[in-house]
Amino acid sequence: MKYYSPIYLENIKTIQEKVIDVFPKESLSEKDNLFYLPNNLDIFMNIPELKKELDNLNWTNYVHSFGFYTIQKSYGTPLHIDSGTCQYSLNIPILNCKNTFVNFYKTNTEPVKSSYMAFGRLIDYYKYNITDCVLQDKLEMTSPHVIKVKEVHNVTNINSLPRITLLIRLKKEINLDHLFQ
Image (cartoon, rainbow, N blue to C red; front, side, top):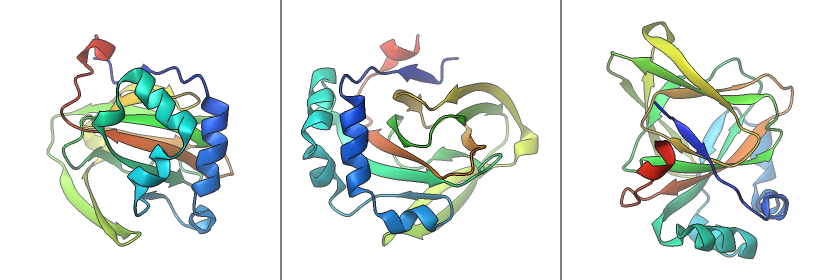
């Protein structure tokens, strides 16, 4: 099974610089955190280089939301699948992403629902026990990729600095099957 697919973005450096400019710096000192800024669609669609790349991919109308995922040094976040209706996320490395990995697993067990609050929004996800899962593949997050968020996964960051990625959640109506064949 294919869990991810690379996506070429011509203006990646400029996008990274402009995205880090809107990143709330106080979030860097916090623990691992997935969060969505209020008005995130307006904020990120107003980055011309990012909007142009989404337009070129014909994905602009399929963007559900933009989120940030920060992770401190970790040998493995909880294994989970994302909640919500989105099947895919375009993940863009923003800062300190070398030697960080998204790991994908298989399991026959059912998840346990978990939740937390971030920027006034309840974030749900479904976690798994690592002893019930088998590693299938891993992706170093050094370039943009679309990943299947309904497959069991986690993140490792063996660096001493926090890793930041921009997660572009794509609506369930988008069909990206061709990227995963």
